Image 1 (cartoon, one colour):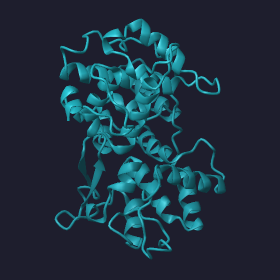
Image 2 (tube, rainbow, N blue to C red):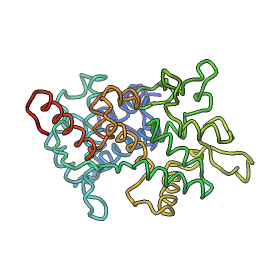
Image 3 (cartoon, rainbow, N blue to C red):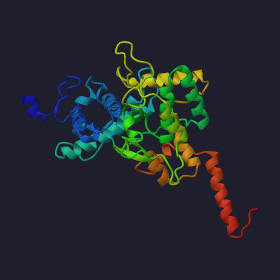
Length: 348
């Protein structure tokens, strides 16, 4: 009780290690108790927690953990040296992305802690300005043809639910966590609004976005998607459930059931089906969502239209998903040519 009072209620329940008030460990626990962390999806929390541990568990030359250092002793020069150290993995392999994320989340933790304890944490954030130079890995965008190949292979494999999930990612631009954990049958053609589907975009909005299924004249907007969903058997509350009943429970389970990281199991199954279908190795489940965004950009959708469909808050977020293609360049060049023609500077 005294320790809890002394540290302001901060403790490190995950490791059982006593947290010293004013240390980097203490700073991390303040951040992990804040809404900036607790409102994140579980998968993101795990990633951020691992990033902070990379920094906190780094062993200094004198044998101390970095996490035991006082925040007042951490300077920008210290953070620069730390980045150079943690970017080298155990086998000597350079891991710029991992080290960069560690610095970014440490910077965020410092900012959050500073707002909560301005008198104890220095205003100068030592992780601000660390030269994190790495090229973000670009996710391959799957084409509509590759989506069709994957869906056919998943159906033939007896894993049609994964084909359905890939279609939802491509057409309705949902993230995998929302598809496998949040999209329920009551969100599809709800009784109070059967002309729509309520699409979760938990990370971006934290809410469901109404998606029209029909145009103003009654034409179906997503005929491939609605035909798929109207034809499959409902085996649970979630739309996407495992295809075979669990041998022990005799019921269909969610794909995200069991294990420390069930998403890895899903990704492994997707990889297996992709290889059986002869699809390129750089196709992943995320590729289908990126492919849907890219199809939207190829279709000359405005940024506002893509944001509305994908549930994005900002246009900047689209740059990660809507890949640049020759079709977009051709459309842009065509529009410029047409504009020149209309002005009398004939190009034809």
